[in-house]
Image 1 (cartoon, rainbow, N blue to C red):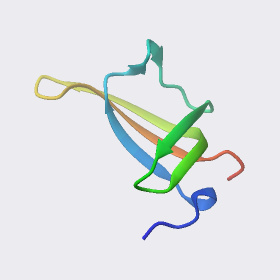
Image 2: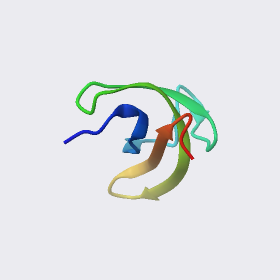
Image 3: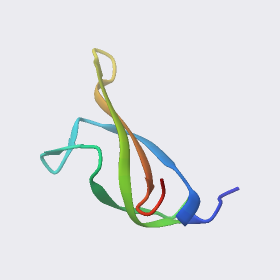
Image 4: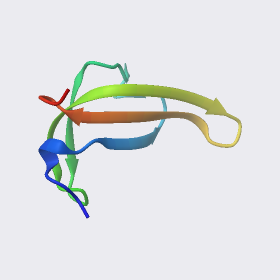
Length: 70
C-alpha cells in the first residue's frame, strides 16, 4: 500500500542517462506525476546510478524524496 506522498521515497529505473538532453543530477528537483503511487509533486533527486551494458544499453536508477524530507 502507498503511504502519504510527503513521506515516501520513490525509485525509478529509466532508459538513458538524461531527460530532454539534461543529465540526471542529485540535489535537483524534478516534477513527478506517478498516478499509480499517488505521487504528484516535486521531488528531490537523492541518488543517481548510471549503468550501461550491451543488453539493456544506458540506464539510470533514480531515488527521489519529498522536498522537505531529511
